Every structure is written in C-alpha cells, then in structure tokens.
Image (cartoon, rainbow, N blue to C red):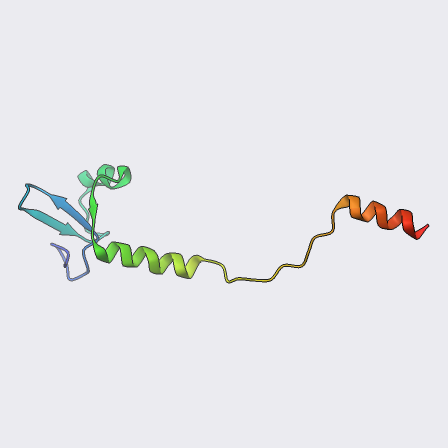
Amino acid sequence: MKCANCDNDALFEYRLTQETSIYYCGSDLPKFLEERKKAGLLKITPAFTEAKESALEQLSPETVEEEPVETAAAKKDAKKTAK
C-alpha cells in the first residue's frame, strides 16, 4: 500500500468507515491523527511491522562473551589467603 500523499509505503491506516480507509506514511500523517498514533489507536500496516523489525535488528547489540566479574567478597578472601 502506498501513502495517499506520496509514493512512500504507508505505515498507518486511518479508517473513515468500515469499507473506506486512507493510508499515510509517517511524514504525511495529518496532525489531528498524531494523538491517535501516540495512543496506539491507528491501525498499522505490514510495512510498519517490517520497518520496526528491521530497526530493532540494527539496534540490537551483537552477542559478546563477558568475562566473569570478581565480587568484593572474593577479593577479600584472596587478600586473606595471600597473608
């Protein structure tokens, strides 16, 4: 689905009636629909879901193996045995 105002993929669906909807991209969404968007009341399109998943993949950290962290109690025990 394309945006009603441009050639971008539509991200939101504004339902006028049961049979009639207008589709908007994120930049062309009318101001009066911003509150509905923030409240999660606008229906999202599959393009929105794909864009969200893609962004989450790019933002997720790569798996990095961490070294075990030595606790304060373990440090005290090490000092006592060293004496």
